[in-house]
Amino acid sequence: MKQTSLRPVAYATIGSGNYAVLVALMAVVVVLSNIGGSKGVIFGPVITDGGFFLFPLAYICGDIITEIYGAKAARRAIFTGFAASVLAVVTYAIIIVLPGFDDDYGIAKQQALEVALGPVWQIVLASVLGFLAGQNLNTLVMSIMKKRHLERGLFARMISSTGLGEFVDTLVFCTVAATAIGITTVGQWANYTFFGFLYKTLLQYALMPVTAWVIGRIKRYEPTYQAALDPR
Image 1: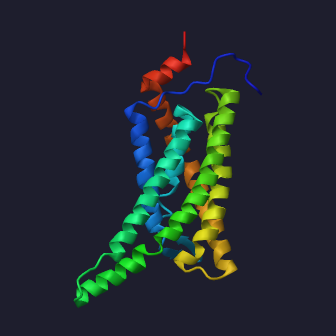
Image 2: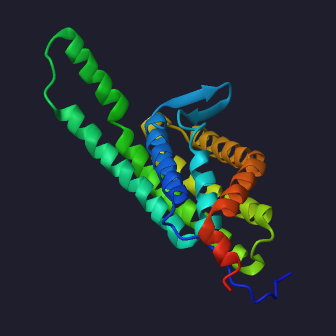
């Protein structure tokens, strides 16, 4: 039911240290996930990549930022994360082209860097396209539902936004990134996409009580959020 209260939607300002920490954490998670994502990983019949265990944390950070600081602040965090990813890719490229030692160890290290870091640009491209689409959809759903229900229904909006956001993100990311980790068939791609979506979504659902607890703590101790709740 649509809430009829005239109380405005409450958001904190982004000037606090809490927002800065969340943005920094999201950026680090995205950069590290992109490095891990360049490695294909197999668990029995399941195909995934080396960033699978870390990337859902970026969505959790996005949910927390959107709920407390609003959609505009969340979009700023998203673009900050991918600016860091682009900087990382440029840095890797420079490291690879710099002249190294020409002994056997130097040549072996150069080859290892090219194999390990060379494909990361494709993972970053996949991550940018997928995360921008998925996380922005996630943010949109969160913010629309909060405007409707205000402080109520936190779990409902996290469940709805996570399912939609992760589906779009995983579909786009796995399609673009597949060849970078060695996927060559439609069956492998379907496996990679399905289990990636299933794992990330179920993990975020399982962690929602923790996410809700963190949101509640930050709301309680964020002075500008408390002021927005009672603007009199």
